[in-house]
Length: 120
View (cartoon, rainbow, N blue to C red):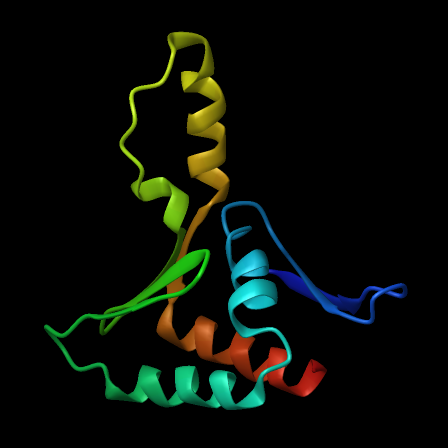
């Protein structure tokens, strides 16, 4: 998983860009964590609470974080909408779903969170 962090020179807000397949981590960091060090610390602490066979789900405003013993998943809450779409929009939804869900290992996720903490 590759990523870069930068600051928007107009708004001063942190921006996170992730490699293909991990794009959902970027908006999750920006929207659900942002510059909130307390929230970031609580997520890092949450990672240490996961045990084998245990799953922790932390829904946010736009994204849900799901942590199991070996894997972390971030998914857009909009993915949970089961509306019937017109056929001509189905490919667009498939593209959206692929870029709105990301998974990685726990160690990689923790490393990324520490990098974000140092950046902000």
